[in-house]
Image (cartoon, rainbow over all chains, first blue to last red):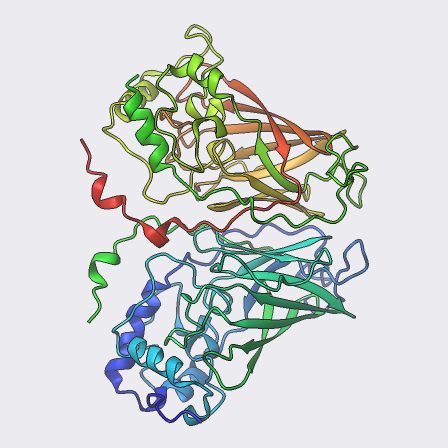
Length: 292
Length: 277
């Protein structure tokens, strides 16, 4: 068991919590697409015309659940965020990226366990310590990656075709491909990438996605839990009803963690909405991001 | 036109190399007896019976000889690996190539912007989306993913959505965007796409022919057979051009290949050097 992990967020001095604010700003993405409410054809509706989010799951032409739609992680309430991360959370709340518009796992992927139980190996703890202390920064308009791109304020869009599922994120035109054409994960992925290489198959009504081939530059959460190129992610997607997609993600990175760990969350459908373009066209961070 | 300028323009549009290494034999690809993809096979159909445009596509490149004939002997003197001159379309260099000046003219506002860009007083680059049509006419392939109500076009640097759920183009688009707002419908076996709602910041070609936010593009895509898709793109921007103009491009399927990830900001070093002249 690793003993060198920095103290848990709960005990990090207030300054550190405020430091999370610039981190959030670096992740700043487009505002919600509220204006963009085209009544999506094929949406089941209640008698009053509202989308019926409890309606049955739509099916694709091949009889599998159709996961297509605009989705957003079910956010953690402000009250719960404060309970978990301290009462100062949300004191600075930038419009469009309020603390209660994201998942608690975006702030700390190990939030459900005691800090001393986080299975970091010494190498991971060293990287995490540098990041938590501000000696190493991310940002700079590069992808947030998996899982963070799907845990923040911005929705994502799933497009399901018979042999390929695409997840579109708002930030910088990022798109992720999940091959469902029967291929298996290559034994070796020649070119590690930000979004990795993903293959999916159906186990009954659950889409099981295996991913590898990541570069080691994305952070698993906002406070900087790292991963290596050896990261392997297994995701299980189950569309419970029209409006809800249950997700379980298991992270296996033996270089960095002593054992695999999982998070579970639900994505809510945003009916009649859409993702925005969010091009990082005003990159001014770099000059200010001198490592301390 | 000073050819050095053209070389520089190519350099700042530099994106990733082809995805040659990524040659997974795509299931569902018709093959000849020797196992090679049969590009002359019939176009595949989707569950609704419409042509399925899904696949990795690359424009039919213009030969080096033709590029030299059109743009001068010095084109290709500096050939950056992965973005050689003969891997781009002639229309990527000059979208008005096929027209005599008396056929299509830039209005004074357009001519002024164009002059600034050609003289280097106005640069693009700096990791912004290349836009329509240029993103599909350079050295990188793009991928079409056709689902029942939406067609996605994945460029290596961005993604574009084409709604095929029956909606019409909104009369007014509140927020102009880099890739615009696109709706498509089928006329027989041809997909018609109408697009508006662009911002005015993309260049129509490498030289810098401009467009305004009023630009509308009408595209027609016809997958002639498994390996070929004929496209016609008509650009209508009355604020900038005296008449609509059309280019015709054939896209070639890149079987058993794929697009790459490409995140320009990963290594953005242009900004400091792109001082306005």
